[in-house]
Amino acid sequence: MILRAVAMAGLASFVGWLLVLAEVPWFRRRSLVQRIAPYVAGGAGSRPETPLRSANSWRELAEPLARQVGGRLASAFGVAEPLSRRLRRVHSPLDVTEFRMRQLAWAGAGLGVGTAVAFGLALVGPLALAFVVGGPLLGFLLAEQRLARDSERWKRRLSLELPVVAEQLGMLLGAGYSLSAALHRLAERGRGVCSRDLSRVCARIEVGLDESDALREWAEVADVPALYRLVSVLTLNSKAGDLGRLTSDEARSMRRELHRQVLATMDRRGQQVWIPVTVATLVPGVIFLAVPFVEALRLFSEA
Image 1 (spheres, one colour):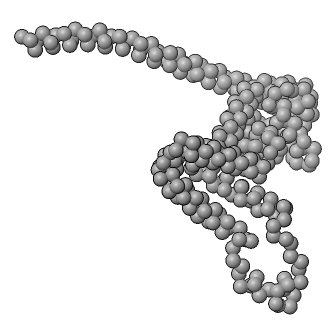
Image 2 (image 1 turned 120 degrees about the horizontal axis):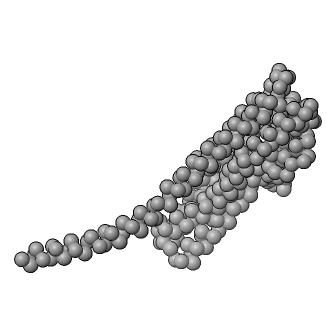
Image 3 (image 1 turned 45 degrees about the vertical axis):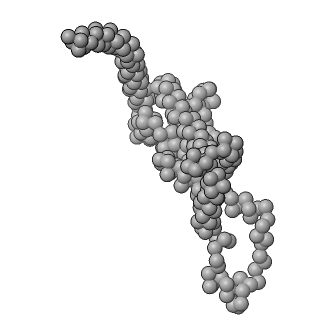
């Protein structure tokens, strides 16, 4: 049974890799035009051919496969946000290709561990197949979940820091600083996630991007509703004369919103406290009620 399960897993893996490699140009059968091109004047016959199995070609083959397979698996499990945006949000040193390659390496390690466990425990049938298939899926999803957790944590920290940063920005604008100078000062003096994001915004402005476009890009990458509203106010830099007051008003609005969220969280946690108390009260009560009820039934049955 073990050999049958391993054979089924190997056959499924072979069919899957065959379908994936069918999308790669060098693996597919060449078209008629490509086959007769070396025999046509001015065709591709005079072009030097690159070696197929060089190290660079294998890396160039593995990288698009990793991006394509990883993206399809992530979308199959309900991940809709682009990977590039999440990596930029957390300031990861990895790009999309490197992350997918590392993710598939984790999946390969999970395949090895799952297969070893299946053989070590002498599992048979569907249980062995579940370990062989579930190992790589678990390794793939662990890397995806780690990035998702880091992304949500970054968004939470950003939403908590935004009111303070908006107040400081409003004070600097009210003191006569330009928007670009105020952003540079906050990026240099800050130590939180906002300062790191503002450093990237300032770098984008220095390479020639407009201030409004750089701020909108920051809002799209961060994906925080409060930041969208702040950026919509800051983009009025060339139109509004009292931008500092508008920014301060937006900071107070952020503080009120965070205060409401904190009160809602405290209310939910206060309600959750009563769940174990209710269970701890009901269980002994049911026991004390059940004892005389059973005794009464016994007396009626004897009578």
